[in-house]
Length: 400
Image 1 (cartoon, rainbow, N blue to C red):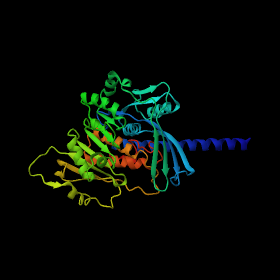
Image 2 (image 1 turned 180 degrees about the vertical axis):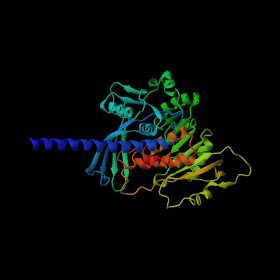
Image 3 (image 1 turned 120 degrees about the vertical axis):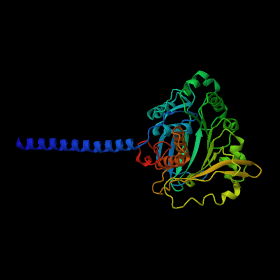
Image 4 (image 1 turned 90 degrees about the horizontal axis):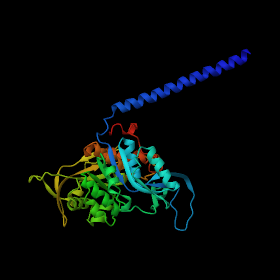
């Protein structure tokens, strides 16, 4: 009887100690989160953003090497999660504290319901996603090469596609209610143009992502206030001899754009901001000669994202024209090879952070490092969304 009682008391005491230890661990975590929250700046006053277009399901497989034609390789891991440019960017924006609404289209299939469930779990408003009867939702196959840390994506768009009849004006006006910004992922510019025209009519700033040249994108860019481009887009689109000349050409062609950013992967990003200062004393220089000392202020020893602003100048591009503006060099985090997992969705994470920065009225010197840090954090996990940081992530504390 005594042995039994002793054993019972031992288990009870152990449970009490375990519960106390668990409570103390929880309290420490709560205090750390509270300290992080208290140290952060307040959220933007207007946090509503609207995103237009692609959301999907990604099937991600990691391989030791990319297969050759007619080859067979074995995956080392498999993951299924949400994808699509707009879906990813708005998920990022939601985790940073914004209130995003997504306009898109899915089917009433298993993929479609999975898309809705994941977006809603992250706080993205899905009330403006059209659900078709029958058909199929967008999905992608993504191969991630463990050696090169590159990814190859093959996507199948939704069927039936988004049509203008899916977008009654009353629904758009409801989506735009209170919006600080409308973001377009550059996909399907035909229907995007209609949405953008309504946004512009309601005086809502527009951010356009330009990943690759597409028919109809010109008309969409004419309405943009801000643009974020992939590294290959500016020259492919303008036929300019360099990225710098291409950025000058973009601002000249579209006088409504305040700034254009080109993302350069591990080399960071480059931003050209329009300046209204037309002072005759401002130095004019050939943008091509500017290229050779553009990165002199960028030290190779920089390991965390930073921003290097350059002086306002009149930049002349031969055969294109002259623009008054300022270049900003944004550096990227040097991620150790042992921590770099997957770059899928890194650009979407960058854009999600840019949306937050615009809503928070951040200056470029804060905006570009924040976007780079968010993108780098994402790259430490497989897939476009698993690694997206939340606002209270300590890795973001010094960037917000």
